[in-house]
Amino acid sequence: MTAAADLVLTNAEIHTLTDPDETAEALAVRDGRIVAVGSAFDVDHLAGVETTVRDCGGRVVLPGFVDAHTHLPMVGRRLVNADLSAADSPEEAVDLLAARAGELDAADGPDREWVLGFGYDESVWDDDRYLTAADLDGVDTDRPVAAVREDMHLASLDTRALDRLRDGMPDSDVQTRAGEPTGVVVEDALDELWAAIEPDRLAMRRAVHAATERATELGVAGVHDMVRRSEAPAVYRELDRVGELPIRVRLNYWSDHLDAVEELGLRTNHGSDRVRTGAIKTYTDGSIGGRTAKLSEPYADSERADGDSGETAEENRGQWVVDPAELRDIVARAAAADLQVAVHAIGDEAVRETLDALESADGARHRIEHAEVLTDDLVDRLAASDVVASMQPNFLKWAREDGLYADRLGDERRLTSNRFGDLLDAGAALAFGSDCMPLDPLFGVEQAVTAPDDRQRLSVTEALRAYTSGAAHAGFDEDRLGTVEEGKLADLVVLDRSPWAVDPGEVADIDVRTTVVGGEVVFDRGGAK
Image (tube, rainbow, N blue to C red; front, top):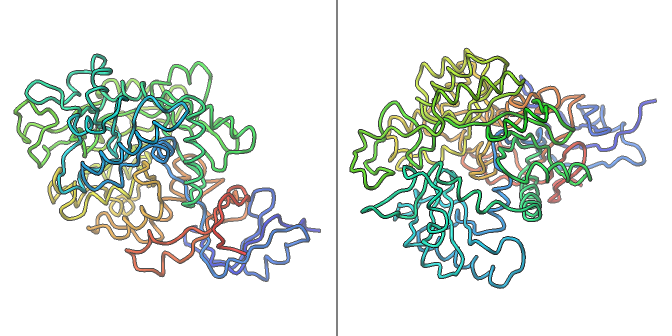
């Protein structure tokens, strides 16, 4: 006699997102895995006395989203500090920071020393400049103030914060004007800030709780988290041990941790059902927003990161954060230790050097994170290799007409940035993540299906696969996750409307009704009965 299911979803439009995509009416789950997918007639008989049966009311069911590149604690820190993504001007950003300072005055707890804001994007402001110390000094607080740009490659500090941190910062990454720091710092200079504001264990638990709650609201069942000098791995494992971690977490440790990872004998894919070791993550270049991504051709706009240099745009092609020789050493060492490698590379010069390093390394399925600026030959090289292109469709918000990339890269390169369509057509392995800008898969899917150029654009099915089976593949999880099939883990999301049926520009407006991880409902807005 067949054992009864623990959970049955019925009266649904279930998309398996297999190749080809198939649809079904119902599915059954037992012991955290899918045991049947098919018609309601085929599946409903698996319901027993103790089975939870949820009528989906005809709504769409998909595999749970997997965010292949994010910084989940940063999502939580934005939620518990000043969220500067809501600001539409420098003045409003300062007002949000001042409001946060007022909250700290009235609060007890471990986060009271600094006034922090995260996620500002000056490119959407009429006054499209970075925040400076002169701006942040207006927060009017006795605490140091820091505002981190959305890409996390640039931060703005008030005078108090600059005085505290300046001595430990490399001069080349501190912007100056007339010989004086402006308050804007980039790349390696941010290390001093991160060290100063790193949350303790209690604060990290609060950030992780807020972030995982937000993730489940968005249908995210698993993340590949990029972690560095942080309490986050310990917090994830603590929550996993006591059964309070609602999502799956793959820990991609920054190369700073390579000594410790080797000493502990960690290997890619080691871990539990919920928390596993992923890749060693390193950098090559910076960001387009900070004008530090490494390009073969100069930036199109004239402003330099170094305000004193007097150099023109023709002389600015970005910078190495990790130079090619050091990159090759990190890749070779990690691969020799049986560890996957994930390399941040945005500009085409950075991608080229990264492919050179990865193609010469042992091991398989290494990753390039971002790969935003690609030439035709780099698209072909990625397709011919087993390197995963781990990319962020939400970055296309900057590739629109008159957007940030039009300023930084010019029209030709903004239309050939993030070439998702070309990569899939060429046969490359494509995985999608958010880099928490924002943490919202449906926003990313909308960006991909409405991309301004055919070379960037994907179909709804292709975009959803990159956020499910493609991301699972990037984490060696294709046998466990990413499609709705018998034997797969029951990580599922129920959507209020079909992304195939709405206008492409409305995909991001679709509500997530229910999120299921391992057969357990971890978020429910009432989408199923």
